[in-house]
Image (cartoon, rainbow, N blue to C red; front, side, top):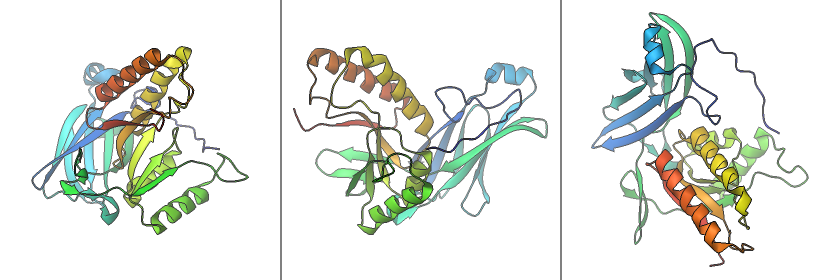
Length: 277
């Protein structure tokens, strides 16, 4: 029920094997009117060997018109964007495009690219969610990736219809429960300006022998979806107290997952859904 494609790459390429990530991680920061796009790129041979081969990583940020907004070079770099056009939720979900190339001289050995939104966000316990420094009350839905008579095997048309319904009701945020959704829908959230809560399928009952699975799935969720401007928090579990008997091990598993999230992604928050305390 997902698209399948062959990726044919040269011997030296951006690393696509690490938990299924895209080979590059991007985070953003805003100071005044200037945006900063922080990039960390990964290749299958490492940056030291890349240098020995006489190769470099060249980064180009393009605006929505395709014009160059900034460039940088290196496996770890920052692109400075004066007068940055911010990704501002449903009001203005503006996206740049980041292109990363492995070059040997003027020859492009490998290339990857994806949409990139520059934004900041924060939570205040009394005043709620803030996007780009301004109050942005969250009103939305929890969405499952299924349709009656079809289940999970939904098409892009079904994803589009779900988003159409969500936008029609005036929502500006979506909780994507309780598993990874199709990448098409994460991209759709970026393009439409939805604020997203993404989570793993650690649901209803804690299984003491399932800890390694929860850790693996959390790594996959974060590494594969790190670059989506729409995502602001990682959900560690859902209603886990419904039938859990070993509370001590369950709580310890949560501490491990929570620490892991903040280690892998210091820029985002963690959350969980729970109605039975």
